Image 1 (cartoon, one colour):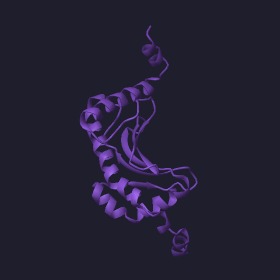
Image 2 (cartoon, rainbow, N blue to C red):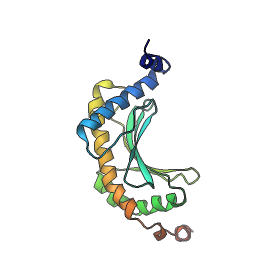
Image 3 (tube, rainbow, N blue to C red):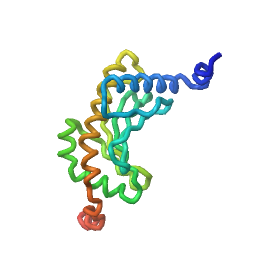
Image 4 (cartoon, rainbow, N blue to C red):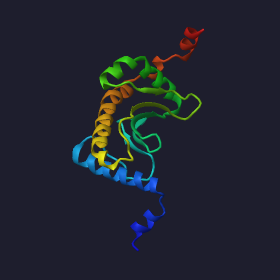
Length: 171
């Protein structure tokens, strides 16, 4: 057997589905996008993309258990993470209007990263017949995230966020 089929044999059906999904998404991107540069396909539930700054990156995600797909912003620049998250959250209404979608804002103060997600529960990654439409939604979401979040994060002055003020407001 050639090495490709040996590698596939080690994957569970779900992992194989994820690998096939990302291979398909990669080729969709190469045909339809000039600004996104995808990583190689893997059997993970995500694929990462740059956003034009090292302070954050984007992810396309699929959830085969909950039957949904997502696009996410991962903010993982350690010292600045919470400041970036909160400064973006101050513009939440404007950002959601620009994206045309409600987002899930997950600060996760005790973790290494904060996340902002746009989820699509009407698209099931287990349904291969609808992958083309899912890829279209994901690509549009990633390109919009890059446009809406990229410039904001790049031009952001994290010194504008003062955690003490937020604490004072809450008491």
